[in-house]
Amino acid sequence: MKIVAADVIVSSPDRNFVTLKITTEDGITGLGDGTLNGRELSVASYLRDHVVPLLIGRDAHNIEDAWQFLYRSAYWRRGPVTMAAIAAVDVALWDIKAKAAGMPLYQLLGGASRTGIMAYGHASGRDLPELFDSIRAHLEQGYRSIRVQTSVPGINAVYGVAAQPAGDGKRYDYEPAQRIPLPAEEDWDTRAYLRHLPGVFEAVRAEFGPELPLLHDGHHRMTPIQAAKLGKALEPYDLFWLEDCTPAENQEALRLVRHHTTTPLAIGEIFNTVWDYQTLIREQLIDYVRSAVTHTGGITAMRKLLDFAAQYQIKSGIHGPTDISPVGMAAALHLDLAIHNFGIQEYMRHGPLTNEVFRQSFTFVDGYLHPGEQPGIGVELDEEAAARFPYQPAYLPFNRLKDGTVHDW
Figure 1 (tube, rainbow, N blue to C red):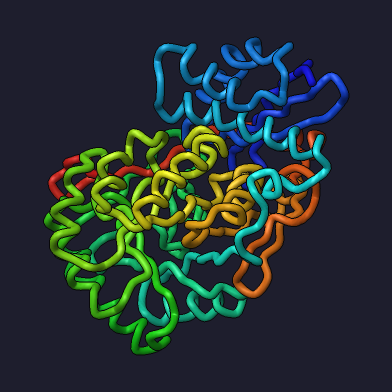
Figure 2 (cartoon, rainbow, N blue to C red):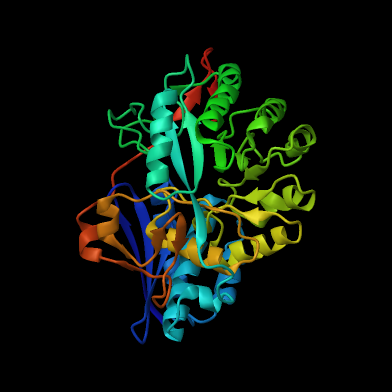
């Protein structure tokens, strides 16, 4: 089943997406997601200029061989651009293989290990009443697990709070990449954050009770000792997880955090290979793997990573905000359904323009996602609709401390 064409499609319905469409000689097409938030054109160029010429004439069935070839033949391995490009090819080839087999992808991955995929939503507010309203709205939408993000007194803009104004004058609305000429500058004060957050979770627990699973994203902003302090302070409120409490490129830093708190830890949305996790998994310093299929080399690589994690009773928590296209989300759902060590799936609803460009078969009912029974990954691209939304430059914000020092965002 030879590949005869591979097209890179960049579109910007509600935000920028990079999609790879591979076509075989018998007319079967497959889609892959190569979106890298704020750096989309780098992946598009990598695919169009360097990868596509290598795909023509290859056998679309040989997915493992294609993965190893693209990873090893470039010599310069790893990195988010390379791994997003490989992921786009990998998912497109899995889509083709499942379509050729006439079954949904999860069946080729071993079949379903569960009937549905528990998802969590993103509630946020500038104060407690607004936060409570957001939590109630998400519960009404069917979410059974809730991530809680809140403004902090004295800080103008905090990641994940939808109602605060963004640099382009629009609501944040879960998409922090703003269509402005230069990245927006935000401010940060870790001590103010550490003082404020435990009281927020105390209030949320008092209002919504002990049963509701609650999550929180620290977004890499704490030192290891600060992260340990927060994890310990949040223990009375029984979090499902504390995410990205400290930059984890220094994997050994998580030893200090782990030694001081029993709050479960989730790490890895900015990681892109298994090498980023070796110490974290082997020493059981985390509880959930947060990588995205889109940024970690696709289904082939993520399956191996999660099998490695399973040996240490570590579960999945695959990254799934709106900077993952419906193609990347669908790929994650097929993997979620098949693996044994599934934990939870992040799920943010895409906007109406995105849903017009990407026709999807996956569903969200009573808090559970399902990829559907359509052969392949279950997403089709409307190329005419995509063409109506050309790429628009957009940047993620960045942080400065009160003294002007650039800080982790």
